[in-house]
Image (tube, rainbow, N blue to C red; front, side):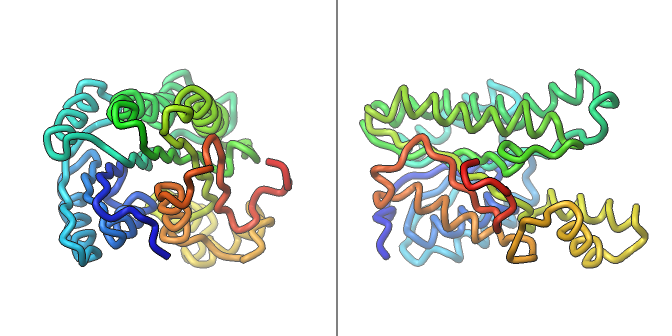
Length: 272
């Protein structure tokens, strides 16, 4: 299927690993020109080489480090993209953290504010910076990353569930109602238990706590903590990326304000 992305200009945040990296590779394969961004240089430089290999159309792939907690760095990223491309067609915001987890009474203000700053406010900052470019052109695609946790919250991850990822879903709806009539389609994707560095760290911690191998920790977690994942495995980043790329395409021209669950069945409700 031709997604009609070739020649489009795209920015992918959090693109040195996981879902962001997989999305960048798929967009490159569709012929998009890309800017990849993350906080640190080393992993980003490794990622860009792999992403370039995914493109056989001669599309350009550039990198720019940015700490999205700092609005000035977001503005500098905006200026770089504008100078490089003249504008932007696609924004995919994958940067984020799990943040502090534990019993509600053990979590401090700082724990909550970190999740809000990194997982919610970074989405606000990058959207605020790049949306005007799309409005000026009268077209564009924005995809934000939410989570199954926003629909089916887990008690040990209150800041991530309630402050950050539920906020992303509501932000998506508000933005779409405000701006999609002007040609910018804005959606979010809610993954569940994807094989990324974030869940690798969680499983490494569980393996130590339970004194088992990492694979045994994954299987135990699936059985006890994610019993509704009926495919009985972690998802692959490219499985999430495939949905993201569809939402970035002209094939999704009548889709906006939506939350797409890529969760292997993890959310128990049909209406979440």
